[in-house]
Length: 121
Image (cartoon, rainbow, N blue to C red; front, side, top):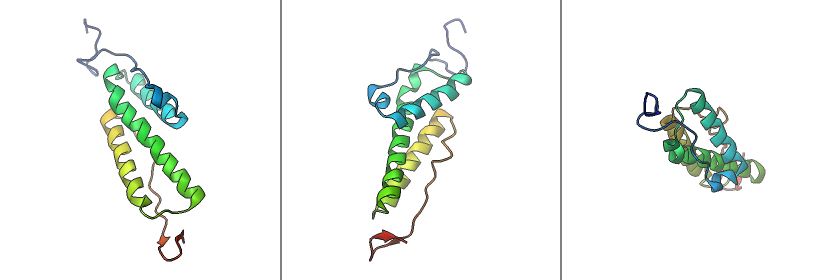
């Protein structure tokens, strides 16, 4: 189009959004940011207007992986399922809004919890 936009990004200009410093400082979030931007750029659908939703997707993916790592190393924590489920739902919703598939590793693995022993069984 004459104004530098494409039908995919109209009415926004094409180009990469600026990666926020707080995303850049987290290697997991930064990697997810780069992955999402790469997918959108390949489709010629990347625009600076995507910054907020890409930030949500990248940060919630980092939170999800951090929670999963903590559970795997420290054991199941009461109430973690709800937090993981909410984080995963937010990540998947942000990916859907970006029109990008979520990472295949972003699945919720339920571990049975023995409330009496406070350990996963």
